Amino acid sequence: MKMILIRHGQAEDETRPDSARQLTDFGQQQAAQTAKYITTNYKPDRFIVSPYDRAQQTLAELQARAPTVPATVQDNITPSDDAHS
Image 1 (cartoon, rainbow, N blue to C red):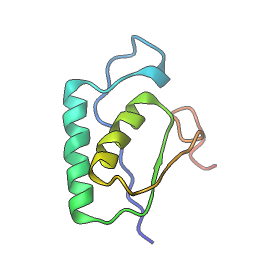
Image 2 (cartoon, rainbow, N blue to C red):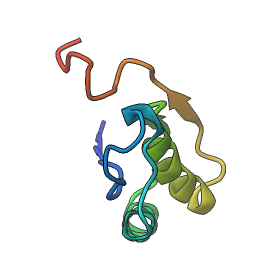
Image 3 (cartoon, one colour):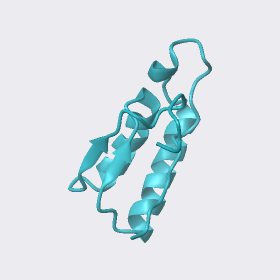
Image 4 (cartoon, one colour):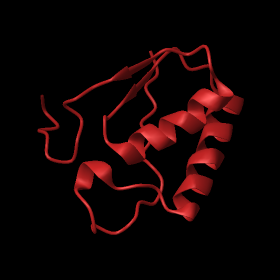
């Protein structure tokens, strides 16, 4: 099994709650470039993603290129969660 970890694109400053922060225009470009690279070079089986808005926006770019790949929202992978669990 190969696991590829992707961090969301650049997000806006912390002017709203962390979970609601959006990708900047540059972050959208980063997400699109990353999605292109991933879907060109790999065949994903599943996307597992944080419920936070910026992660969902990054997922949307991946799903636009790989619409049949299932996605799971995992509530315990946010910045405040314990990485060990």
